[in-house]
Image (spheres, helix red, strand yellow):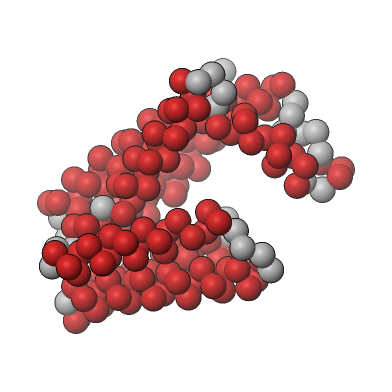
Length: 183
């Protein structure tokens, strides 16, 4: 896993929990938003180009963080992964229903970005079949994780929320592995 991606996801969440415990909601949300934007900028500088999907997390931190501050309720901020997972699951489901799983649709474009010696791998029919299964399985994983995060956000501490929030990444990897191996 890319260490920058790891930093972009873990640091703002832990900073939120610590800052919220020490200085309250405003301090926690502002710290997480600023850190996520700083890490986004660092990622942009390291890559040398703007990678739009890396902006999803900071934008939702900002929008839902502002809602939390305005309404004086941290739940809006904590529901960021619920919203992102729900939107992503809906997008994947839409493509699935249309008969072209999202990962299959983008495989040819991603294949062109691979080194010349590896090009053609993602357009192999066996790989496309596996990508279709992964795309389908991710819908359920994202929904399950969204429900789990929502429940913990409503019922448990900030630290429990951070733990469940971060558990989504190993779940994502496990879902991909199982979907690739199955069938």
